[in-house]
Length: 201
Image (cartoon, rainbow, N blue to C red; front, side, top):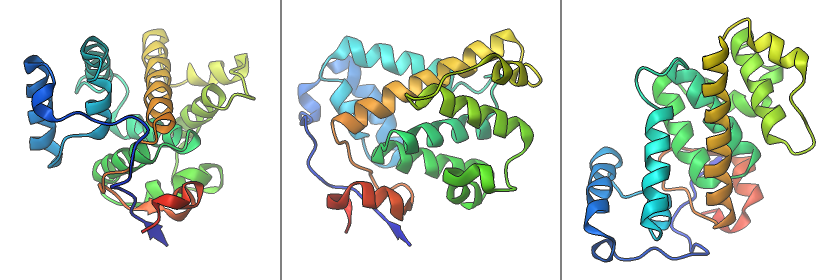
């Protein structure tokens, strides 16, 4: 069973589009063209325009087409971090992108229990273990895990991989703390709805 969660009050309000600096409006226009709506996190980050610009640039670097981290792996990372941090918006939009990149919902639906699934190869498993070691506060990255990453990535790629995981933690913790809602991009697992009962519709 799935819930779709969106349209609820946030802890910080967005401003009308016209009240943001003019140089940010092309970002909003591009989001509306790409997603059919302006993303709530963008409107909240943009209350501090320089902060929004910095975040947008960093995201653009990490999600660029020629990234050494392939698109499916990037999506697995962003969804798993989002699940751990219980970010409804991030689970929603990143799950939709993962489904698009893989052509099905199979990995989206299996990701929370990836250790028990045969859908993930050894490289993905090593990365997901790294994601959890970085994201759960009661875990740490150890030398054994790092050594397994070196089977698939060089040093520069490990830096970028680590940067992506750290960025998604920043993004999902920001959105979760301010209770930013899902915007209806993807079906959300029931567990996400249970964690936020007011989001059920």
